[in-house]
Length: 455
Ligand code: GLC
Image (cartoon, rainbow, N blue to C red; front, side, top):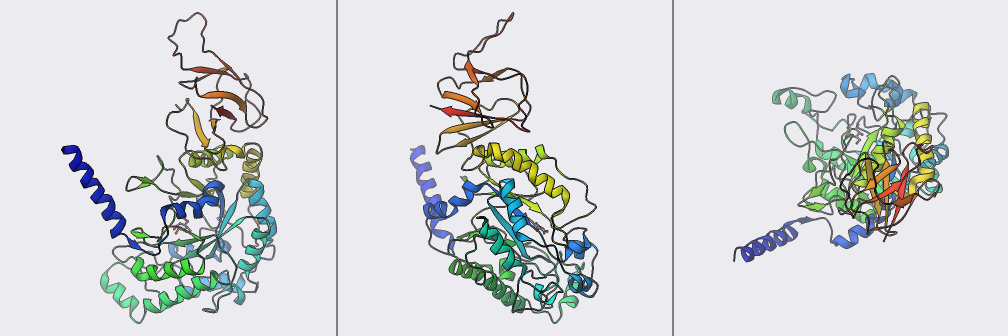
């Protein structure tokens, strides 16, 4: 009886959830999975944070952290001229690193538009550079076969009608101060501006694969979906680009169709993120060092191994990695970013089979010490990433009836499967365990991968 009651209650809850959810559109769960498939297979993308702040070279939030006024920020607008910008070179570097898609800032919080906009003169066409960076970028990245994504900042620290809030460079403390500051500002005019701009970027550059809107901060002196008009906005986005993938920062978490994937930022998730007990698509965005925009004097650069672990670990939990480059104001990649990309590329050249099309391994596979597992459901192969290279006898607990063949991924050299044994010691061995006989010397690969062919 108790069981029946529980079932009825659960069914009621599930169906209530399905029916009560507000909807942006009528796509089914299966259709959504299909729409996202290229992206979940791709696993690895490049984020690009580029704007006027590259000239300050001390974080893309410099306008806020130093409380710079529009007037004092103007010099960056007047000088912006990335004469060395060569998007084909960028695209080739992304591709060589193993990245399959890229997302660029069309406008960041500073409000400056890297694209030609009919809504404002605060755009690339009015700088000394005077050419549509976004157009060139899209053409070059498309030509290299990369997926195309636009980041668009909902926040705007330049627009005169955008109301001052707690993250604004002119943020205040009390309600009275805010009332005073926002006298004469009309957020509905900005809302309309932002909608028109999103329409521009989704109309003028052909098919766009990803829209990355950033970000909502509900609560006191904050902004939420009502401020952006998110519901209407996303309806328009879905109409203009039905195939597009959307991140989750427009504050439409309760809407079906309001977002497609979640975006843990500079944060390693403990396990595959879930919503109402269901695993959801996710992508972690991360920097090479502590800033998104070019930061000349920032020194906390992650090393090659850390970056690879970030990628492998994301895939092992069913997610993607969007790794950021902050180009300089000349239009080039910093030498440290170049090095990081090419080192990752070297590893990916030989090991990307453990990344593309891969996901979390089935739970039945125990995880050996100091390793990360990924799994390709299509080929039924398991990948064991050796973070700390072990000695010859490498025990796989409980794998005996599951494993057909094993090899190193980078050179397809066989790794012999043997029975676990020990000399001069009696230890109980489980009949379901097997041993892999590894070479003593670590192969010349940052993180060696064992490719296991499963039965
Ligand atoms: C944050 C920051 C921003 C960066 C973004 C990337 O929202 O405001 O500077 O663009 O995260 O995820």
